[in-house]
Amino acid sequence: MNTMLRKSVLGIAGLAFTGGVFAGPIAAHADTGPVTAKPAAVAVQADKPDSSKLIPHGVQGAQSHIDLNDEQIANAKAIIAATKKAGLPERAAVISIATSLQESKLENLGHLGDRNDHDSLGLFQQRPSSGWGTPEQITDPEYATLAFEKGLKQVDGWRDMPLTEAAQTVQVSAYPDAYAQWEQQAADIVAQHWNS
Image 1 (tube, rainbow, N blue to C red):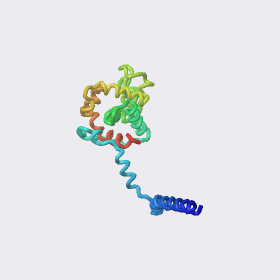
Image 2 (image 1 turned 180 degrees about the vertical axis):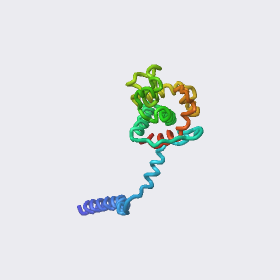
Image 3 (image 1 turned 60 degrees about the vertical axis):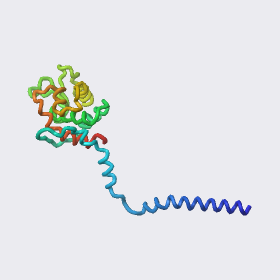
């Protein structure tokens, strides 16, 4: 009986010692004070899309930039969400956002009367009379993005084209080179919000 009691006591002591070894370093680190934010910042940076995926050809020409309000940011996030839903890469979101920046400054525009280009509506200034959808559909950011990106996917080699060529092939704008000026801001928006 004495031997069995001794083995039990030694077993419990061994467990306590082992638990102390494993818990000790953790407990010791708990008292070191607050953790700095630097490791978290590095982790966030690692989550950002690679700029070579966002702007594979570099930007073309002078770049424009506008400050975005909450509604415009929400529309950009809606474009990113729709791009992901379509199973397309970050580059498609850059092209889509740059196109919307040119067409509407990321504002979901209704009919603008005499200032309107025919019956153009929404983020991409799509026209119901050209078959893009109903006014209700093309003023829905998800629908409008998926419609634009459906057209983009039909462009042979869009992934390897300069942004303005890919956008122009879908949009058929009177100002085909205007999309290029928004590439850097569009890439910055995608980098900031793709993984948020």
